[in-house]
Length: 360
Ligand code: PHE
Image (cartoon, rainbow, N blue to C red; front, top):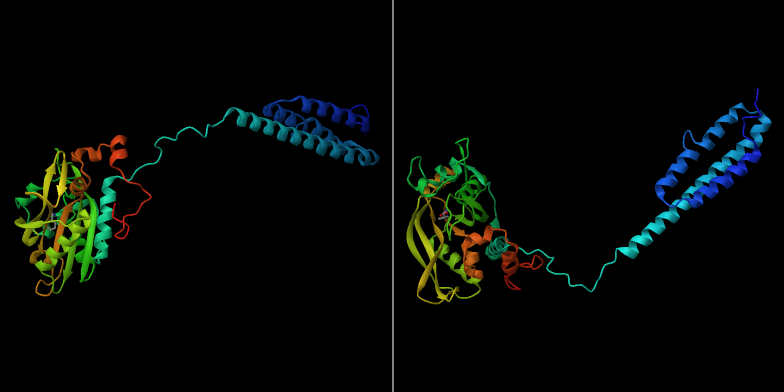
């Protein structure tokens, strides 16, 4: 039942190949090339339709036309592919020629710097780990128990007001006002002897030249069976000399914290030299940290027997120590995110603080 009028003949095939070859060679963009591929080889394409008609042919016709159509199909596919590669290469050559880069231009300042706060925290961690401390952490959002009650601030105690606390809306949680709650978390979760520092963010509703609502502290805690005030003093004196990389004169002044007894503040000797501050010489004293022997009530709140265990704790302001060491005049600039400030006071992110090669 074949109809020789509409069925393709072997002679047509060469004509189709020649025509498509010419069309493909004339195409100069990838979109048009793909349109041609679909028109010839797609599901309803010219060649695909011709292949479908094979079913209507006689066995003899099929023997000739089957291989001929398959040959046409693969020839046209190869022509399309070759043209595609040629067009893509030409597009790449054109891009390479037009998108040139002048490698002799100066690069400008492209590398970021490490903020002084993480730099100083790293320096502190290096010094304290050399003394056998490990680094602990606690959450920024604290509960009343860890931030106050367990630290021997009974409910209603006036010292709570001195902390200018940020309360969360639920009335239960606070933004921690100091890193001291980490003392509680460590004493409740680990067994003495303990020797940890806890660096982190702290928050108080306060803002002026020497206060920002968010600031950084490093807490220290040492608990053992024979720890006394001499250990506290020796540890902190060694720390400041290592930190400022010079001999530093310190003094301890009696103070009050609910969670330590006795309590003290430690000052370092300094003098002003124009706008700069010189540590270690002069007649002035600057407070840099609070410290003391852990209060028996705090030990009890953490289920430690004060007749067996004693210890000392300290808390220092990282931002202020950074200002002192690196001579920054205003604390608020630290958190203003000004790239010029960071360019000037920032540190190389690729240089690690170490006691051997120097801290900074
Ligand atoms: N948490 C105290 C403060 O923020 C500092 C401190 C820590 C004092 C540990 C004594 C012991 O002011």
